[in-house]
Amino acid sequence: MKSPTLSTVRGSVVIVVTGGRVEELMNLLAAEHIVIWNVRALAAQKAEMQVLLSDFFRLRPLLRRTGCRMKVSQRNGLPFVWLRLRKRSFFTAGILIFFVTLYFLSSMVWDVKVEGNSRLTTDEVLRAARAEGIYPFQWEGRLAPQDKLAKQLALRLPGVSWIGVSKEGTTVKIEIVEAKEPQKAELLNPRHLISTADAVVTHIYAEQGRPVVAQNMRVKKGAILISGTLGDEENSQTVVAKGEVKGLVWHEYNLEVPLTHRTQVYTGESKEKLYLVLGSRAIQLWGYGKDPYESSKVVTELDPLTWRSYKLPVGWMTEKVMENSTLEEKLTPQQAKNEALAAAHSDILAKNGKGTKIMSQKILHEKTENGKVYMKVLFEVEQNITGELPLVHNQGE
Image (cartoon, rainbow, N blue to C red; front, side, top):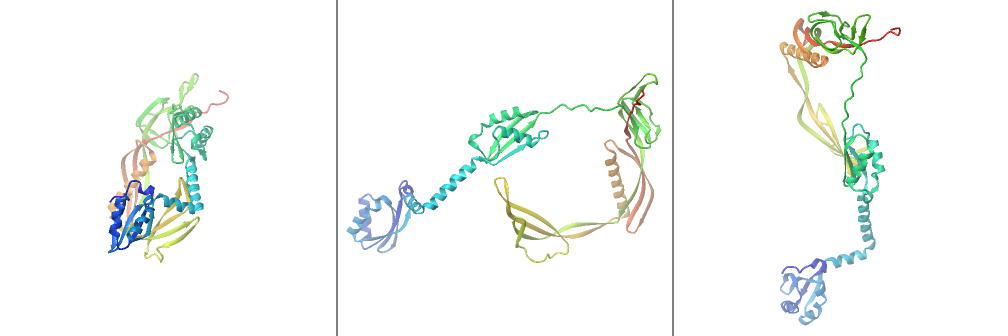
């Protein structure tokens, strides 16, 4: 038979009945409308059954009539739990205090995070938040609705187009979208544009100022390309020279590349060591013994225990010792030569900026000795050759 409704709340006992007239007792229980369940025969004159606590005290007259005896083997349900708690009043009070304290602690703000700010400092945002009541150890119930907090913060912080306030657990997160400011025009003093290297001019674009050189003209380093002085000697005006001048420049590189490349590779073999971290001390728990590898690399991972957003000074540390070996790769002189030229190309493009083109290259000298390839190479490069030269006025003018 299934257990009665709310038997856990009402309470029940499991009894073991012994005697010569157990079957007659069960018939009397049914006649008295006493509900039993989980009936199990243990022996010829012995049975186990479960009965409601309210019906337990009605069993004695029936037991006397049938000559049976009973023994309580289990007590289940809320009444017995409550009785045990009453006997352990200090323990019960401790549990209640714990849950009440936990409730109050979880109802407080423990941390305030600011995201999305770049021009505004985090301290400025936190000061504005504190003025609106958002700060650590503030009660959640004393905070205004989140939409109202966001509106008030937007009024306090200049240059903000949107603010969002949300609460995640015990952390209040303030998300900021700053308004875009129009880019301020750079204030420049009058200047010439001069050549940064000896070159042959290939391209001239003068946005502002007077071009001084022409295409295919050879110029020296420091020569004026676009002048910032307009007019003649009697009637002149200085401006900020703007534009771009490209020219052919020659770069000489001394290159050397070894014919043998040595690289460290992992073999796949590894060993782990486990530590218990207590503050600044680490106690090894696993992985004792010397490292079995001739060459290895150690990768350390620290996993501290956390509570909320705080890292505790207790945790685990894992050291993974990975075996590695040296892999040698032999290059032919041609492969070494190609590698050296490719490295020089990358260096030229990186140093001279966007729009740089390598027009030609000429190997002036090449030799192979002592396991290396040596080369002297001349590169013809088209690049931007413009630099700035400020115009300084004489005090007497």
